[in-house]
Amino acid sequence: GGAMGSLVTCHLSEVLSSPVIQISNRKEHINAVKENGLCFTDLNGNTRKCHNVIVDSVNQIETESIDVVIICTKVFQTEQALESAKEILSPNGVILSLQNGHNLEALSTKIDPQRILIGVTSMAAESKNPGTVIHRGNGKTSISPANPSSQNLSNFAQAISNLFSKSGMEP
Image 1 (cartoon, rainbow, N blue to C red):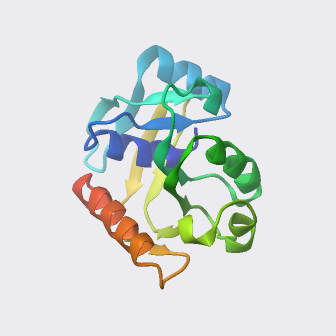
Image 2 (spheres, rainbow, N blue to C red):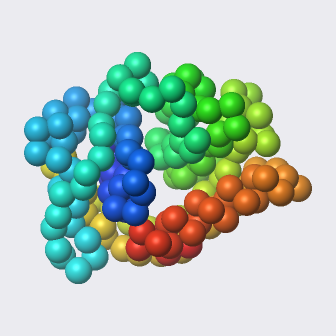
Image 3 (tube, helix red, strand yellow):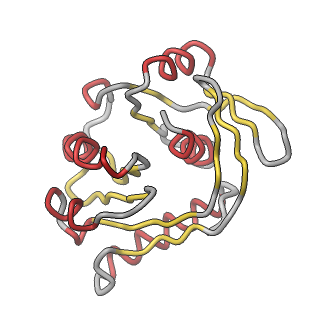
């Protein structure tokens, strides 16, 4: 339900054929998105609706497992987000941490480092009202494996970087 999570959700929902699911703990945001869709204003000032799914709990997700979970929470919310992510992450799935500040140690206590990607971005987003997100600035996003020696994780990082690029977010 935060601005960065909403921004990433909007961008990815425009290029993926499978549903992009946003989990939020902000009731007003959830209700607004369920009622009106997520209203996205791009860098050119154009506004459109994003077609994503929003829930407040992994229990509401109608799929057995997810291949990539992107965590865009504040660092102090990491542990709770990881507990939820573990419930829906496929056996070979990965976690991408795209947060303000990174805590690989905390991530590694809950998820095998062979399944963790670390992202750093200089994109900017703002959410003035529930159900809205404004893309305020584009910037580089770097995605790297927590364990650089893992070729599988490096391949995942490259695939996600390619999706970000295809969706209009700078890799």
